[in-house]
Image 1 (cartoon, helix red, strand yellow):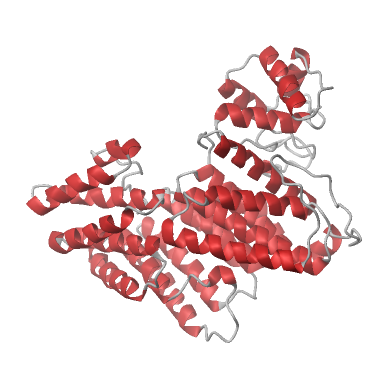
Image 2: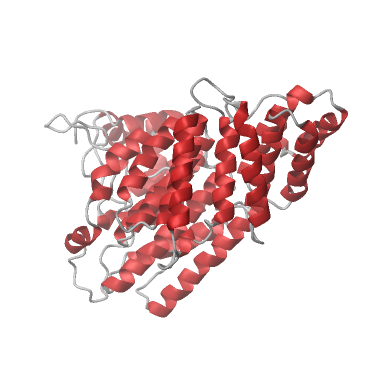
Length: 512
């Protein structure tokens, strides 16, 4: 007991709107439903948890996490409640330093537990039709400060101390989390099947967006987390962590794709931990770069640049040139969002050089195979189109790259093609070419019906904003009417003139 209030639990308790007595009764009822009928909590205990910082014994933290998840309609973890026994979150140590939020980075033995707990809560929300919302995104500087030293250490050395348990097939930790399958140690054949499932999910996401398969990916990740609770031979354990990293990135990207932003960020952080456990620092850096892309999309390019510094420096010397090129394009997009045209052009030039220097003599990892020449041009188009909000002379360059991306796009990459059309149409509007803009905007609209990507609608709204200047043109007036008809009903107000995403501002623009 710290003797100080648990501010995290107190804040969430206030949001939930329970009385202390009501929460005590709910804890007892939920604990019994979870197989712990002996638990007897009263009002005084709840008061000590909130007002005195007392951390209850297991299973109470897990019960509380389940209750708050159900009540608030978003994933609430033990860390969110400030109930981690290592020390109260946010409390200052004796040396005056401050502990990292959410206990980041997690100890190796905690990563599988965090993974299974979070995915279990996410699945529970899916089953009950609740929508994850309301949590705040951690700032880029917060994540960077928490994870910098950890990501820069040698994974092999860390693994040597963290995995000292004999590989005898016995459980390494007590099963944790909710909705975990009855997992058991597995062999190489089962891991190969899991790796193939990742490819299937990745292809589906690239084609149709994250909405329709997100639950399946989260469920698969939950099962892998359960399997990781058991000790396997080191070579199999690392492959399992690699599968977990790939699935967590997909779960995060799909969550971002449907607008579940805090959930997405959590999955990206989980993915970085899992990749680090597998010894794949480039994968950890790429996972963090996804969190950076999310920040740019949400109009927070300064946070994105903080995350990109960590992603690039923490990826290690084994990072392939093509992977470095990908990271550069994301950094350039953030710079463009802040109107830093000169820096953006330098960064994109470096990306082109790195991409061209990759001779392909070292096979690209599976998670990099979707970043090809078309993607390079697509990201350049996005960066120049974004910069064009500050400097209209960048619009023709955006048009050129967008057209090259469209020509090079492989089949099965429908969502990326939609983004290319929207970048191209937006650049044409900025370049005062409404005729061409109308053509490409309509091509995007034709393709959007089969997509379950919230991000495509977000970018459509940004393009819609640019049509306002030409609202008196008959063609553009018809286009605006069509856009208002196809936008999801919940967002129709945005199309009518209230954008869902932030408008351009000094020092940065709205995500595109």
